Length: 221
Image (cartoon, rainbow, N blue to C red; front, side):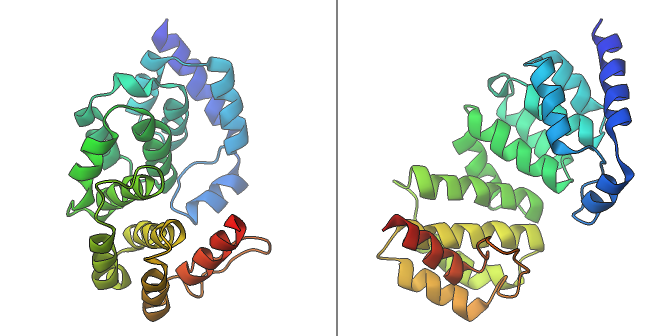
């Protein structure tokens, strides 16, 4: 039954693939052509099916893995399962959804945050920084914010893209959430100029940390 269902779901994903969507996604490193809204509709219909999610993940197909992350049960994965999955998840969207939809909703978030934070693989390390940013925002007790700023100041400028993006997000949130550290966070952003010239659509906030911090703080008033 499960194999039959897997074949049917893979055929549905294949039918949903759009060459124009694939072309746009490939520019961002995501090798699939399924519109994400349509993918979510499939997930909504299937509901939670962890066994099917395991089979979809094992296909190594990006669209199938994204669907797997939407229908799995995060609490059923071990820390080692998630570690292996992250190291396999090279597509940025799969990496992002794995961290945000599965790791953050499971019981191993803190263990994996610590494990990944200083990993020599910059993609894995970027996940550790993303989880650290979650702590900065929601549970900062026990996090060495000054030490994080020290690391950002010394390493962010030359970090690979995805790690740099994660470090920059952490820098911005430290500045947004902590008035006492805000001047230093803004100063670091201004001196390093990371993402200063990032193309930002109208009505969207620039990821350049000084602008991002100022915009989000203004909304708190």
